[in-house]
Length: 248
Ligand SMILES: [Zn+2]
Ligand SMILES: [Zn+2]
Image (cartoon, rainbow, N blue to C red):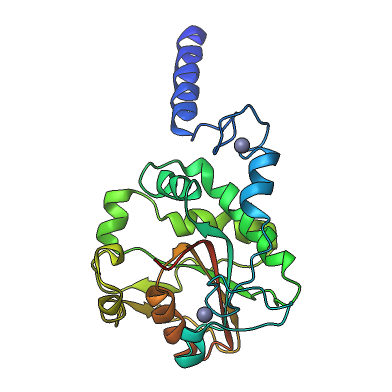
């Protein structure tokens, strides 16, 4: 009998191990052996550029001698969110990392994204920390087919390292929207109308809400979510997004 139990225990352990994401033993970008998910050289090269960005939407701006400024688009039509923090630009080779998490299911990358995003947030002395975090939700159908929400995977380790509560059931995706990437920028705003709603018992009055996502492109999704949060009394909305798509 003990032999049979031992066998069962061993089988269970093997099943558990195969269910866990493989831990990277080499740099996710250049492949050199590294004890962290990213080697020191790649981290310096891709994540510590002193890019001046629009404080509201994080678009790169020409150097402005440290003066806080906004891009032309935000000055013309101010988005509903107040600020956007990004860890990096969405360009090669970083785009491959983002795709590996989202479509390759490499969930082990999410804690790395969270750590780089936290560093970017804490580096910016002007930023006040949010009082509450939410992840941009996926529609039920897309969640079922993908099996996970990449924004939530990034938000979990981020909330743990910042000590800020993650509200997992506060925002709901009401409408199954077309994938934003397939749409013209002008259509994206319309596609997002009424995409989200707040849970019936949600109370965001006076809160500074941090909204976590993997990529910001036109900002239409984040704008729709911020507008909803503000409508329900949120005092401030800061987007915490891993990578910023650059204008073509
Ligand atoms: Zn590397
Ligand atoms: Zn802007």
